[in-house]
Length: 197
Image (tube, rainbow, N blue to C red; front, side, top):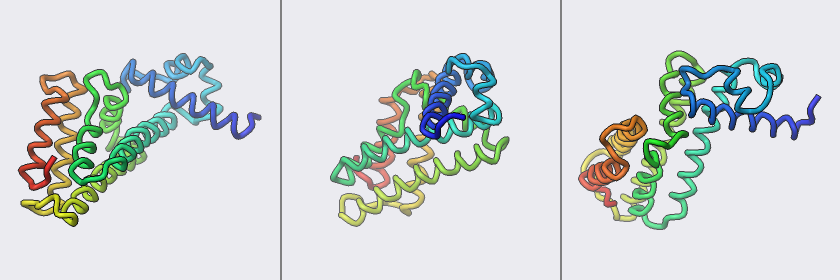
């Protein structure tokens, strides 16, 4: 039996392999064999660490969310003014472009919501985290006098999340909306809502 630290390392390697394989093949076409091949192990070895592909995908979903969320929170925390925090949150919440594999994968995971209670929970958790980040930035901006919101704070935060999600989806789908277009449009909404960026 593997030692716990070896087991944990191996599980992380499997998750990384699952994220890479899913980014390459898409969730709809992903198989346990794809993940095993990407990890350089047998299917049987994967099943030693996980019950099935769904268990791997749930952990990969959670891992991808944590990476995106933790990185964003750290970037926002480095800023001093609420204006800079809001600008950073908007920028970090968007994909880097159509080839942003992790963000595309997180959007694909959203499709699994409604089919899996675990994916449902993760999608709702990510939404709550996005909403809380914007809510805190707006509250701080109002308290410091940097922002003078034209509508309810909660609605403004919800709209920022909705715009981020909608534009992000169009970006990774390779449509006509660029990262610069999305950034500009979200910042314009924020300014119209009384939160300078």
